[in-house]
Image (cartoon, rainbow, N blue to C red; front, side, top):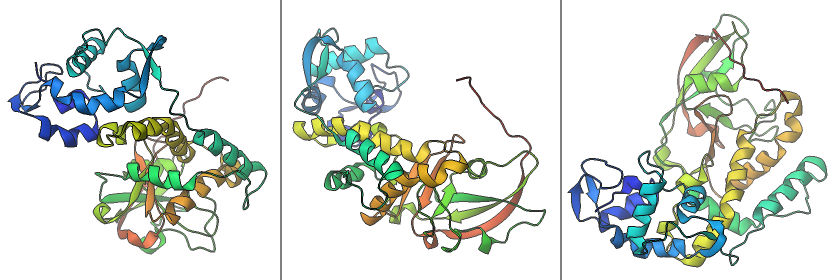
Length: 338
């Protein structure tokens, strides 16, 4: 029986796996064809540090469930609980490990999420510029290093609603001048950032047009290989415990993932326009910190479409291209009763 990197869906294991592989063929667990294969027991050393951050407890959950919940591992469609438990038993050499239950070790706890919530509330409601609540800025800077964006597109888009039938020229499709830059998810008023989407549809959805309106869409080129972009979309899918190795560091990182997910939510949460001046303050604070730490921008999920957005701190980084006209033929609304 041999496994492949696809069984786990972990970026770190993808990079480690070639050094563990000893054959090529069909995976015994996820059935992927023509992939590098390794004996599961050969992965025991890198799995042990992760497993050791959990303590056995009769009131806990299975390790496979913790691996899915905490690290987004075993995400392949074929890796149901039975296959995942079978593979984990082969990796550890413990036949009944799939029937045992565990809880996260009490050795690893973090108050960073609680501290962020306190700071967030204070920034919104009490003290804007000199808050009493503080983050562990050194730790946050360290955590951002795990979230460097990879495989980003080179072409992005920005949309503007036209006042009439005349398409905006390209020199009016970039970030607004500082004197008129209003509150944004990432930027404070007066400090312009360039907000661009991964597709024309995403860029249009973000400006919330009405049916029948005409929209100008410009494309911009960036070289993501030369930029340091923080990806706040899905921290669990970007952070690999297997590349860390040290048990204490893995445990500390697990405690901080909820905090990182909360930061991503700050940039995605829908906000009504009349509340933007207050509701955007926490995400503006976060982006100011990220910029100060030497990053060029932030990638985040779109709350209006299936695409992704990028807030560039230095608009001049993006090279403007062409402008095209679009008609908003239909706007979809999804509602639920409270």
